[in-house]
Length: 123
Image (tube, rainbow, N blue to C red):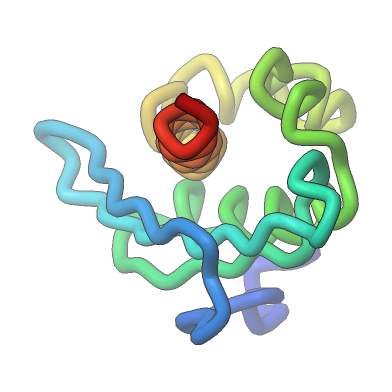
């Protein structure tokens, strides 16, 4: 994706199982991740985002939503930014780590909330 490419999977998701807001303190980046879990309850059915902020946070949110479609929630919860984007310029991630990790951290928070809801329903 180039800077001029429109974001992928951008906008609210009406059928979201969980919507999770996130922000980068001190920077002003804000994002909301919309996660729809598949019918098995174990994989991403669909994920979309909307937000405002720097190019790094918004571009990586777009890339994240593209790459995690269909992934296992268990795999995603343990995923590191470098594993998801091995081809990403290291200088960008190192200098803007909070911006780069915003979408992934917010998605992980959404997965955690989903897991907590499932545990409460099972009890």
